[in-house]
Length: 344
Ligand SMILES: Cc1cc2ncn([C@H]3O[C@H](COP(=O)(O)O)[C@@H](O)[C@H]3O)c2cc1C
Ligand SMILES: O=C(O)c1cccnc1
Image (cartoon, rainbow, N blue to C red; front, side, top):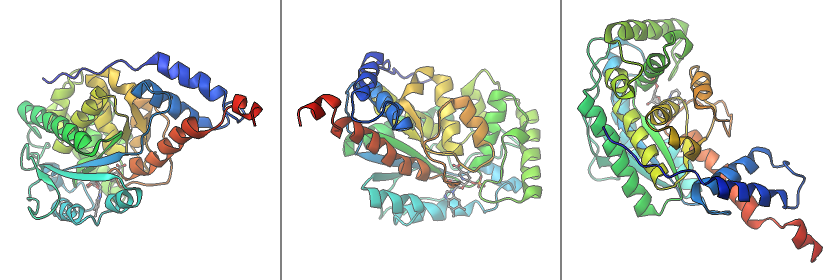
């Protein structure tokens, strides 16, 4: 089992930033959540006014055997097609990344299809799609460990190559909302109905069926709620484990992480379960419209930065929220203090 050494959040640097913000030329507290973000960034980076400009999105793509049970509004083959779309930089996350000058990388961590070798993207399969967890464990423990390790290594390389100051993980994998709901239901011992939603667009009948598939699978698989590795092996996904490893790696390097929607938050909860010390390194980019996200957000205990009715994944909501982190950093770096004002 991999262990990560996450350095302690620097409370003193955070306190210093909190006090400094009090001296800025505005009514105390008037920039709301932006002030809290700036304080958190100082504690993460140990710098009062850090730059977070250089952001990057690392998208992990993988397939899910559970799609055989008819739990997604889209067929499994869309994962591979969308991977090619990412390679041609035509997906929503690419459109936003280009606009914001953010770095982008795609990792095939467990797709059935292969990437096109002529374009961006790295092939590092820990398997060729998970097994159908209604019938057998999604992955072996070794495969989960491999996926976490791949996430860790690829995040380290991505951060270093692009000198990143902020990491966003994203995912693509038809069926991965079913896997995420199953992970949450298993980990927190709740009925799947509490954490299961429409995903890409199931109707009410489809959602009921999805809940039933998860319920029956959990009765069959019996993941051990006290063992996150076992939960991930039984009902998780390669891209979920990859994102978990990537988030933990960023925290090891004192790089802030912006968590995206439902699947991403599930990966973040897996990371927090493994290493609770990661928590202060995480920001929650947005509140997804996916039903189970409210439950996951409550478990994570973070305030979403944006609420735009989005339910896409890919890292899109987190990437948009990065602009708010930049605004927080600009506030503490560029604003005058009341002392400055006295000298004008
Ligand atoms: C064209 C397309 C692009 C996407 N980009 C992200 N997702 C999102 O939808 C999938 C999860 O939903 P479900 O569990 O219902 O299959 C994931 O791939 C997620 O990233 C997409 C889905 C589709 C169809
Ligand atoms: O919130 C998400 O990340 C999400 C929701 C539905 C489908 N895909 C992703």
